[in-house]
Image (cartoon, one colour):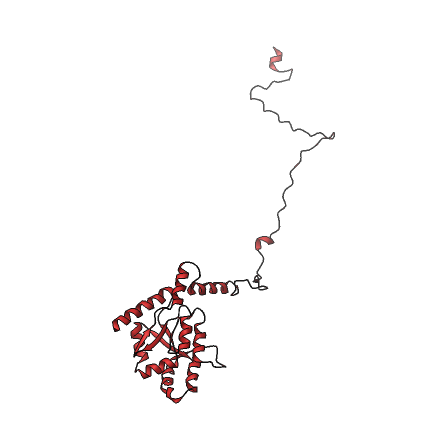
Amino acid sequence: MKIKRQKQAKKTLSFYKYNFNFREPFQILVDGTFCQAALKNKIQIREQIPKYFMGEVQLCTTSCALKELDSLSEDLYGAKLILQRYQIRKCKHSKEPVPASQCLLSMIEKTNPHHFFIATQDRELTKGVMETPGVPLIYIIQNTMVLEKPSACSVKHVEAAQLGELVSPTEQQSILNLKAEQGLSKDGEEQQGKKRKRKSGNPNPLSCLKKKKKPMPQQPKRTEGGKRKRSRHRKPKPAGLTLSTNPNSSSAQT
């Protein structure tokens, strides 16, 4: 029976790893009801959960869950001692504490961006977890811890993401991060009035150079009558054919 439960837990963990990007160490939010049930059934949470998950885990809780145990009867003092040993995650109710079920539901929000597991025996909290996609649930039944199979809400969410009807939580978070880097609001609209200012730098050195004056084209010279003066080019005479015009030359004497 134990081997069968571990196989089922491994299959469920693979579902959340592949579809919702869960990674070790797994963060498990624990409330007082789970600690009370573990104490009653003599279950060592810190030792048995890592063996059951076959991986590293981080047990954590909230200040609201601790304060809720303070306000209850002394019968839950042992559960309070167990819960005090776990890490405390910051919640939004530091000034005005709320019931543990309401606080843990606010921690997972709508898409469980921090990849929390919820360990509880509270029915109200269990109902809220089953209606939120991508939130694994742990509870104790018959002296054993059980990792609940993926809820119908999680299965439908994955099927819709595979069909391209919606964006998976991991992709949605990456889109939000990109929008924040580009200066866009959460609604996808560009924030008005927030334009990037250009840094004042030195002018371009090429723009400071003086422009060179282009030489004017030379026009042909004109004569007094207004006509253009043509330049005549004389052809060179061949050597040895020059005629002498001197009447006293030797050829004239004959």
